[in-house]
Image (cartoon, rainbow, N blue to C red; front, side, top):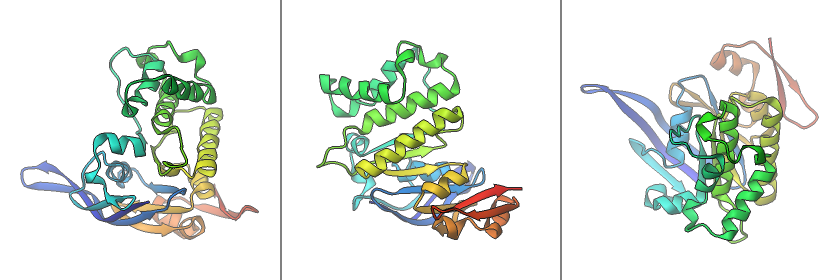
Length: 263
């Protein structure tokens, strides 16, 4: 569904000086899969998510979405096929939580009764009723992440039989959430993947969640793809020591994914 061919991304840091953030990466993401992108801070994970989702243009290389160059999609076409939840989405205006959720429906055209029904469904599934009239800037960091996750779902719904090829990009979506809310959101994501073949691309520091749920994992190191494979291929004690500098004990679970205990 998503294919990256030799993508690199550099930024200018001075006169005639450039820093490479993403360096010659190839990858394939299958429809209906959950893919994890991991690595230390500064490895290029967030930039890679932005490139794959079409938010920024790579310096070189191509991104194909359903076999079509992502640059050939209009902004509206792209918004109907994928949604992005970034680490921080600044909103300085005094919009309410309901306003933010409704923004997810804008790519679908003028708001209709069906749009409000979809938003109501997301409100109920994420327990957002008590926040609807609250000014978004006044929310806590965790509440904002929860609302933005709702906005991302509002943008992608409904998952119609004829138009199910949709992608949800998530860049550290759980960092400020309470544990119970984290579990609720992760459960909701798993349900959407199982029921509608939603494609999900995660940047996440919770390596045990990545190991449990991701069918393919890419480990970035200094902008390059250092490792790719299944959880057992990527999460070895030697790899975790080399790329994260942590001593780890790897346990095998009955569900056939590794469990990491960090010493």
